[in-house]
Amino acid sequence: MMGPFCNEPMTDFSLADNRRLLETALDDIKKTYGQLYPLLIGGREIVPENMKHSINPARHGETLGVVAQADRKRAAESVDIAAAAFEHWKRVDPAARARTLYKAAALLRRRKHEFSAWLVAEAGKTWVEADGDTAEAIDFLEYYGREAERLCVPQPLVRIPGEDNEWTYVPLGVGIVIPPWNFPLAIMAGMTASAVVAGNTVVLKPASATPVVAARFVRLMHEAGLPEDVIQFVPGSGGEIGDVLIDHPLTRFVSFTGSMEVGLRIVERAARLQPGQRWIKRVIAELGGKDAIVVDRDADLAAASLGIVQSAFGYAGQKCSACSRAIIHADVYEEVTERVTALTKRLTIGDPALHGTDVGPVIDRAAYNKIRQYVTAGKQQGRLLTGGGMDDGAGYFVEPTIIADVDSQASLAQDEIFGPVLACIRADDFGHALAIANDTPYGLTGAVYSNRRERLELARDLFHVGNLYFNRKCTGALVGVHPFGGFNLSGTDSKAGGPDYLIQFMQGKVVSERM
Ligand code: NAP
Ligand code: MG
Image (tube, rainbow, N blue to C red):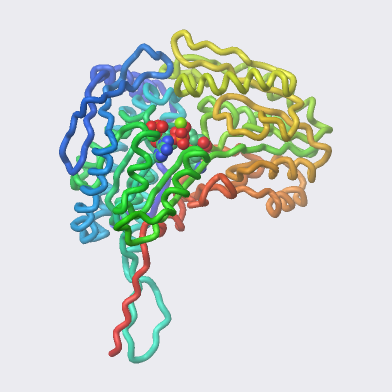
């Protein structure tokens, strides 16, 4: 029996011993740079002709791994094989499935710094961000294991005389798991482990920017005792093989986290009945955000400014929960923008492998180019307070950039940029600030800084986002503490890391016997 869930603690890098652990891990992983990562379908390693290098975004000349790329035929085959594996995996005792997750959590805890080092190298995360990503992955394994034990036993029902009634949850079938690159361990592991512990088999198509972390996690699951045909590891271009995976008649559900554009495409395709398909495909889609922090006139302005900077520029703004709009009451607008600018100028930009770096690179050239367009547009749409510099000589570096006096309808205030770019918007009063905050197609996270109870209660009622924070930053949701998911075009509000999540990968079956 496992004890109650508790969150994995963060590593304290102010201690020299802890710093040494991660430094050693960063050195150790270099010995395996350039390794080959094959496809893994039905437990069989496959090395196709087409391969792709995974690179370090802080040093784009550095190859971390050479990763097999599935074509359409392999992708289709992986769904067939996952469907065959479902026949045995669905019969495994849910408690045994949960134990596989607990074992994987224990292994990951032991090898925490090794995985964090890969996150630094492949995703460009700073030490603290990488450590948080690994801790969250451990949390998901521990949490969903317990959730499976809670849900995979007969559930309470009203009893009537003369009948024996039983309600249980059974798995769905083959799930296509398509994670993003920005939490390449936590989100990928959470999406995969939840599907698997519920009794489903999976085709995991990792994000193309971060396949090495995913490949290493799949190996870890095997070390933990997961049968090798339960997860098919199928790296490849989403644009090329995504449709085949989604459209396959044996696909039962799709678990997707990524952009709105791709998410909506998946929802649409999954809705179409294919020849031979016998179910309505379920789609769990967690998408983008245009998250705002609202600062009231009567707020702790120092705390608000720090919260804005942490939320906007942590991991170079590449979080779905990142603050990309600071909506500030006119009476304190000048003071807050000045404070935010001053704090931002103090951030250290550079190689995330170095302890003390606050902001690393953005993920790849496409992101770099997209962000550049918004920085250029931003200078026209408002007043540049700091940043704007970019350098792709060695890695994809973008200075934390703040644009003030942005109109709430400007592209800088409406589009998800997914980089270190903050738009500051002036609000006439608190009601106006909330109206601006709600006026995008998204609804993922948000925060309000205020010392007035009635203002907070108004925001509690009106600020329409899945995760709303008061007097704290809008990033950093903890498993079990802050179930996570967004409203409107931010997704299906699946609330990852919460008690509503696992049930989405199961269906309830009621058996009633006349006695
Ligand atoms: P993305 O471009 O949508 O990619 C996400 C995944 O979808 C990748 O594995 C990608 O593969 C795949 N993909 C691309 N085209 C596809 C297609 N036509 N069919 C099927 N799959 C396809 O998003 P991203 O750039 O990786 O991640 C950033 C986005 O994720 C942001 O919008 C962010 O807000 C969102 N996000 C949301 C949450 C949340 O919980 N709501 C959490 C994290 C991130 P390739 O890599 O091969 O293109
Ligand atoms: Mg993309």
